[in-house]
Length: 236
Figure 1: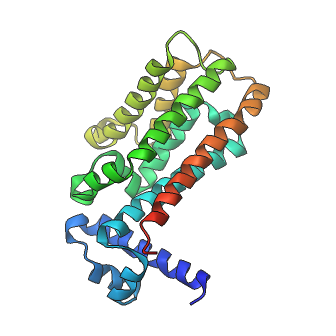
Figure 2: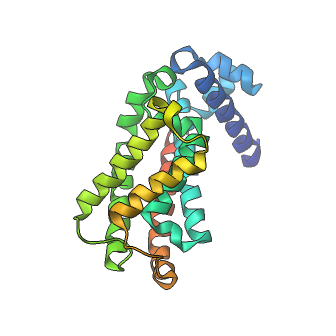
Figure 3: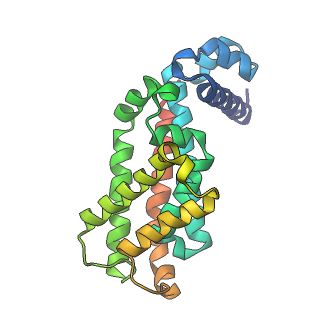
């Protein structure tokens, strides 16, 4: 079998596993059902993946890698997207659009079940890398006057994480009180972060353009780390 055919078949299995995970939850999904949905034999599933947990963890890793790729692409398209207010605005919209990211951010036990604990253990290095990327991003922005320095970096990191978590949770807990338009809800998160962290007025486009490459490189590294972990789940 050619490498392209093997890759295509692996993606089809991942697609099937993702659909069933979201529809049925971790506990009900079986390798037999995944194989049936992907139109392959059960043995073929195990030619690609070590076991069911490795396959479903790969579903999560693929979603995270795609999320990091989108972040990098937005920054390349418009350097102003390196600002935390704009980045978190886009992250909230991604969260609302991608059910795998939504389940992961909300620790949805109905969907993820035991996979949630497995992911936290297996992806600890990736979580550390994500935290350090945010720290590096804020530090770089502070050095170029694109984020204020009236608070420390650790305090600003906490603001970003707490505000994002609050808005993510509010999508479930207070959905009946939220503005009906997703973009408006994302704008409110952006306003919150901009007010808390960023200088007044529009950022200097020369400054954002100068800083963007270094920050983009960090997000590209996160995507690659996610893909490396995904490949680690494959049966070699």
